[in-house]
Image (cartoon, rainbow, N blue to C red):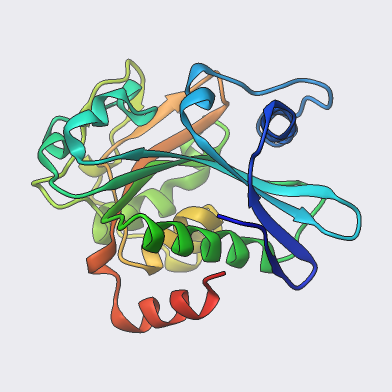
Length: 243
């Protein structure tokens, strides 16, 4: 991807160590509240990092990373496979991309940033003939009580197809797939993270349990999206937003 501009922002891939370090610092501020720390792991070296910057100030306002797989055969090397049993997806025949560490700077609340981030993703998907996106969608904090209606909505409407359903692997989970309570839709959508909400609007699905991640101080669910399953109207809107 070359540099793309959309309104106040530009989108580009990382070019060097300094770019990756900038993304790691933004991730640290967003996920850990550390102003001078870095959020880094071994997966960073295998990923393409997408940077969204405010052009006037050169401020990094959003970033995420992408790890590509020719088929599901290598999915056990993904970040998500540390926490979920992904044996079912190992037979997936098409190209896959794991999107991870998605974050928007806490000081920037412009809704255009999320739309631009998805526009960049659409461009990447088209350029690489990707057939499935997947990753971990995170709820802040590790207290599931704060998100019960959101989890009930996921269980009622958005569980993964049985043929792709991730299995339990992490030592600490919240098995919301076993709950029977009806969700309060207003509370459910209020508690749903924006990134996950967008996945669901496009036809995405989730695991039947959340992983309790004390290191990141999050509850996260495995999230998948088959590109061919995106409703036609949503596909049209996404294409319109593509960079």
